[in-house]
Image (cartoon, rainbow, N blue to C red):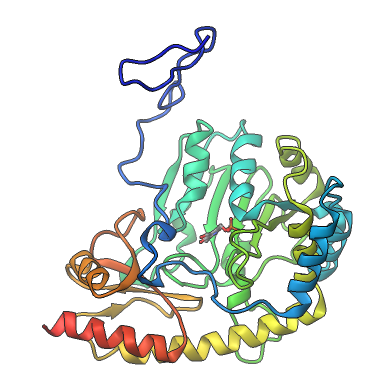
Amino acid sequence: MLTQSSGGVAALPDHLPAPVDNPPDVPAAPELDLGHHGDVEAVPGLVDLAVNVRQASMPDWLADPITAALGDLARYPDSAAARAAVAARHGREPAQVLLTAGAAEGFVLIAQALRGIRRPVVVHPQFTEPEAALRAAGHRVERVLLDPGDGFRLDPAKVPVDADLVLIGNPTNPTSVLHPAADLAALARPGRVLVVDEAFADTTLAPGVAGEPESLAVRSDLPGLLVVRSLTKTWGLAGLRVGYLLGAAELLDRLAAVQPLWPVSTPALAAATACAGPEAVRAERQIAADLAADRDHLLARLAPLPGVRVVGRPASAFVLIHHPGADAVRRALRERGWAVRRGDTFPGLGPDWLRIAVRDPATTDAFTTVLAEILEG
Ligand SMILES: Cc1ncc(COP(=O)(O)O)c(C=O)c1O
């Protein structure tokens, strides 16, 4: 029987335990809104520089298999082909791939499956969902805060030696910093699960390097490594929900054990297969090169603006800026039709930070003209 609470909201049936804000023995909710994401800021009517999903029409090699999969929806999804394709792309065995409904599901699986973890550490500033998923599962999360004065460079000495789960992004959202693969690899050790969120790895490039410069995706030799990948950013598939985890088969088996049945739909599996093919990988490299040029253009436009500081060397599809009173600037931008991502919900940042998506030069020019007027006005 459902009961009615005093606020008029239907309460839980009597035989179920009352919901708890925090599981027992877990610190109170974090002071920041870890569930805040850029999509909330990019409301219709505003130009969206808040969400880091590429805005381009889908190539035929991707659209065609997704569309064809719509004719096959009566069958339950079969992930075997997509798993094999993703494994081949990263030089791994299919058993070292777990397909997920976006990278976001990967964080939940890690948090839910690895209940025995005693000292989970999240390296911030970074995407807040991994910490939110850990907290929701009842873990006591410790934060390691990287220093803006040091360009948010990873200082491995800050990670407690007995941390048995370490979570870091590479390149990191929102700082756009790309950590050296060797520094991350040095964090892996027996008895620790090292989670590297590579949701934006496909946006990175380096001179003379054919592939993604600092990715650990191929490193099946590192103990406890879990690489989280997303296909929603570069390929504009945020609404389709598709990503995957790479890691040792035994570790992935534990995560798969808490995964719902058929979590990735047939069209999403078709997308995963297509995005693992050679055509996709070639296209990704070109997109990363174009993005680098667009990012340089944005950085050049930001450089002369009064009080605006870019920390470190941005390497991904977004740029983090510091400006005293940036949050007021963000609100003024909204009034002029532009949405950028607030920085104050990220641990280690605050109201003086904003994240700006890299867009085409014309959009960047229009945006920085308005930004200059606000800052100089
Ligand atoms: C760094 C990072 N990791 C993971 C995700 C989640 O991606 P997905 O859409 O694949 O769940 C996001 C989304 O914004 C992100 O910024």
